[in-house]
Length: 216
Length: 119
Image (cartoon, rainbow over all chains, first blue to last red; front, top):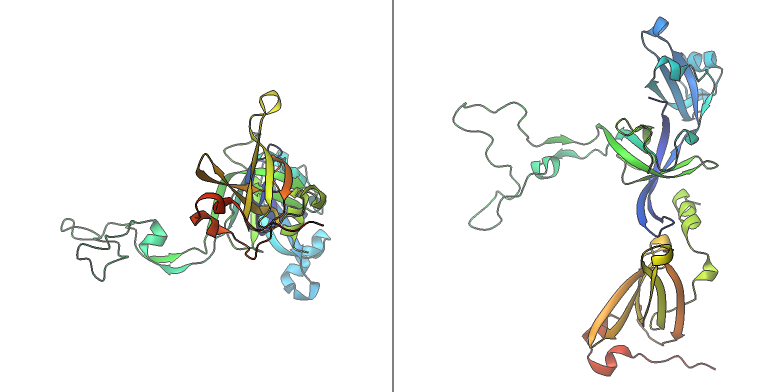
């Protein structure tokens, strides 16, 4: 698995392909990211690259982290994330190197991870896609309920029963999103379809796990 | 400028390629309806421009005509590369942005609006 990149979700729009097909795309401001730390099996027990994305003023950085950035001799970044890689892959990069959006090709597929929009305490209709009880035939005060949650035997609620509760604000990965365009000079990535989270939120982009090397 | 608008601008048609139409005009639109290369099929749809919807790259226009006694409406995304030509046949003079009232009309009145006087 090759290295990924960090980015910021900018919003959605529609574009036309050369053949006239209209596609909805999410615009992501991806990278450039700096390699801040290189973890190795000898010192850390696994191989990984720590990437930094976004600018942060030096006086806003917490003191323990200032030393971390100083050691790598790079400007402080807003977001830090690790990408676990094989030794061969991580040896391609050194501390201080830049990872750019050009690591992805037009037509390839990516997996995108981000924090989804928080929805608070929600009912079963929104949270688990339950069907709605009938609105007529004498139904009253029972229009969005989930119905029965069990039966007389075993006289308890089965574990994992889908019920109302907190929904959203969780890490979500969307797999196999097609890269529609890569705009190198503006560090932009256009992917087909929706990406979890609100605009301006941080996203983590990797080569698609289930479609490595596949091109459309 | 918002980055989304910058992206849209790169995919939009140049302003000179779209004629300055207004609602009520009789226009004909030539578009590729199927196929590519040799098997490409091109069709021209002529009718009254009754509405404009959306903005930016998503802008669409609705064209209405009476075909064999049946009202037909087509919605065209004007920035689509499949639309090769937009021609204004004649200019109309209307006071509405949406001419949906024409849908309820029968006969000659259904396809006619006041014409703009040309010098």
